[in-house]
Image (cartoon, rainbow, N blue to C red; front, top):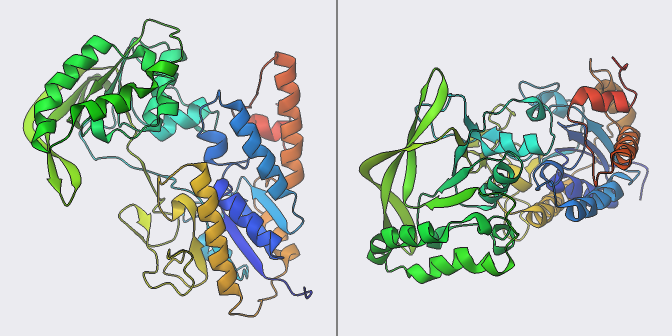
Amino acid sequence: MSETKYCVAVIGAGPAGLFGARELANQGVRVALFNRDIKPGGLAEYGIYPEKHMMKEGLRKQFRGALDNPNLEYFGNIIIGDNGDITLNELRELGFDAILVSAGAQGTKWLGLPGENLEGVYHAKEVVYAYNNLPPFSQKNFRFGKRCAIIGAGNVMVDIARHLINVQKVDEVIAVVRRGPNEVNFTKEEMKHLIAYLNLDEFDKEMARVQPTLQTVNQNLETGRQKILDSLAKADPKTSSAKFHFDFLASPTAMFGENGALTQLEVEDNILTERDGKISAKGTGTKRQLDVDTVIFAIGDKVDESFGLPTQWNEFIKNKEPKFPVEGVSYESTIEGIFVGGWSRKASEGLVGYARKDGTNASKAVTQYLQTRQPVNSDPETIAAKIKGLSKPVIMKDDIKRLEAVEAEEAKKRGLEEFKFSSNEEMLQAMGLIETA
């Protein structure tokens, strides 16, 4: 390997960014890894249900290994974007040979319904980040009443329902699902944590209610029923008398409230239509109101439109005729030298294993691109000096090690499996980067 090395910026230190950065660093590329949060890990750190300690620790171990590569420099607490600490154009001007954007899908997908601004109406992302102690969401005051509706039927819905029942001690959770039981998208492994709260008598009535609609598209009711009840045999024991329900074939149309606080969710009843083997929901015009204190939208994510890359349909626009495809997929943005991977390439697609593969494949596309050009000879020391010159604390690899040691000690003191500081200020103090108040 010659002394001249390629220098690549990777934006986002979730699984896609960390594994992509590791792949590049292992190839001898100098990598500057930028992260919005103080800690690396992204959704692996802040999106997995808190009780999954072994899974999280296993991933952290892999992330530590990636960060230990001497070719990789970490810059945490840095927001890249039009409204951030450094714009994408300013980053390009620092002289990187390529940029890999793996910043996830930081935007929030809303439906634009009346009442979305009422107190008690939230996006799943806010709730998940809050219970995983990600600032500033961890400082937000939520209004979780006794009766909560979650829009969606995936693993995120299940996680939030668990949190509402087990931690927030709500009385009732309703999953409002646009289509029928055959289209639910959660796994048996996740549903086992929630299924004990499902009122089976009411579930049977709901199945009977939706059966005629399912028959119109030749769906077998029993298939959907089994998909949901499959996890009953391994159900976690109940810890409260809370109830969980499904409300199928229903789409939210509005939220109503009093004095700025939510009191009702309006839904429209749907029928199902089939076209080319795809089942879709279609509104009937019949609407009804559900009395609820809280509504949480678990309907997926979109990329941040203020990031600095062109967007369309909630995604960054990809080059449709890529020069460097990997497994037939385009990882190229429409700007030469800028690549996208993980949820930045396709929002809300797959879990950690998927993000890992996609980040690694994106880095392979970057490697192909680098092989077509001479290194720019950008100076890593100059880049680091410019970044450290920002008027805020910049987190480096050694800082993260210090923070992890302090949090591990705190967990031990408190007799906890895991401890996390819930504000940036506390983390910065623990690392010795700002004075203790």
